[in-house]
Length: 351
Image 1 (cartoon, one colour):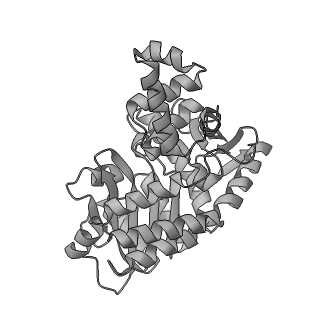
Image 2: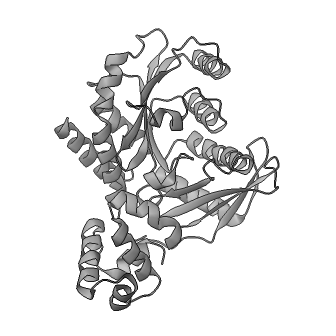
């Protein structure tokens, strides 16, 4: 398994650096997994332990028909899916087959109808989870009429969880650390109760076009992303325990670390939702950045203090450490991130 994981990570990194589309990156992963579990389509979705269970920050697709992908994702955002990520992540083996269940529960009926309308038999889902938390999900489709996924398929694909986490982390951390170009001002989209965009600022259009050009993702993923942000913002307004509509996207996918945040324009969450697109600030990006780069809690404290303008000696006094220890932690952060020094690190963090 390890040589294949190493190969797909190497090929994925090379293709991403050459501007390959999301479909192409998904195709690379699908090609390696095909001998493990036969499938007709694949989606690999990335998040991070700090991000919770809200909308994902990036994804790779291969073989999913656009209308089906849109409906599948929106059902997840709108709580119509029979296998929510939160529930799946709590299982001892965080994998399940969706669409083959004959239960009469309304979510199962919606899913079976959706699958039948698009010639899909079932989808195997795996939550990519380790001791630190959830890093994403894998979805594999089989067409209608084919053999449904079974327990052996679940077992084989679950063994690939650690390798796929490595692929996602390698993809994020292989990107240039500091952004190559400046970002436009923050942009705002207004999404109606039908989850369709009603209006947008000029900066929002610039952001959408820039992200589309950089990521080369299928058009439906961008459309459903904003619909999902709208649904998630309303869900959080109704139940503050639900994850907020907040996504921190990595430079590997978007050219720089970005933040997308949705907020209802009324207290009940039934009217319009404003969605803001902007460059990530240090406070926004640091938790997710530390997840992907494996930065420890102590190292994060030191980087946060550095971003606030504190010198190493001041940080040492603040954290009751020796200056030598602070410098050792900084060297470890530079080594993990590939930063040449403080300036490059802080530039990556939006400082």
